[in-house]
Length: 199
Image 1 (spheres, rainbow, N blue to C red):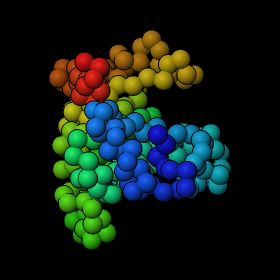
Image 2 (image 1 turned 30 degrees about the vertical axis):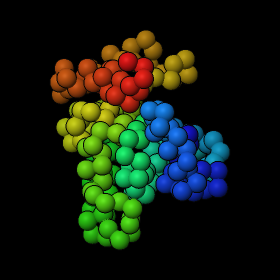
Image 3 (image 1 turned 135 degrees about the vertical axis):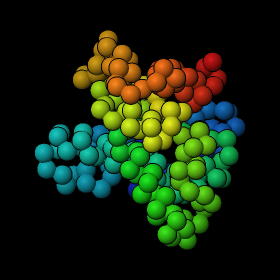
Image 4 (image 1 turned 90 degrees about the vertical axis):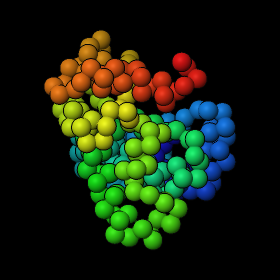
């Protein structure tokens, strides 16, 4: 699904609750794609200059940030206690920063998110939200160090242009600072937790 609904609502809109309930009942995850200029477009989609450059660098991660913030802040994981979600193609280096910011926002003004009953980092640590990494990302080890090794997934868009093939998986785990345990989880074990019906 895209990070926004066609009417511009975020992913915590009650309109999606029946979908989330059904997906949870079927033991399936929801998957969010950051998107690149696909309807529904988010703020900035038509206003950004140098669109190809800025869209890839900023707009796609912004879609992931928006989706993650709405799912956590809107209390979706509180309401649907078995729901799993994966966010794809939005890079990963921003995640530690955003989780820190969400925690700070929650701690200072919890009244702004009445459906959220705990810190966003606690929701993330629960292990039902997953996020893909891009093979050559420089800060993967930092992400794993800050947020743990249980949320990260190797994903590929092959045969899409610009994909590191056939060396993408190797590039993803060749980053310095990753333990063998983190590599094993990134390359498959975490995906099996996101999609347990495939095991």
